[in-house]
Length: 83
Image (cartoon, rainbow, N blue to C red):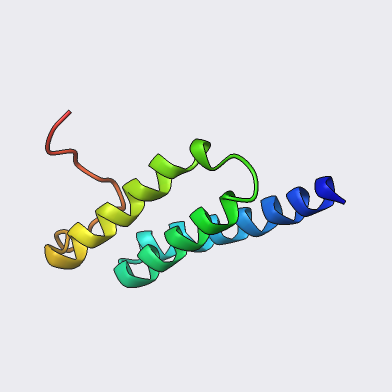
């Protein structure tokens, strides 16, 4: 039973992740933040430490872009301001 729940969670995470990436690339910042949180919630079913930093990064970028939108013609690539 535990394995099946993990498999179902992975399928759900995969779907949410794809939705989040589409929202991010479309500049839908609030949706991106919500979907990234959904990904974190589902990932908690199995190894959340593997996913926390990835989805935290997307939430933070979406928050920043909501405050300061990228230039017109943005191609989805994030330009890091620092290392």
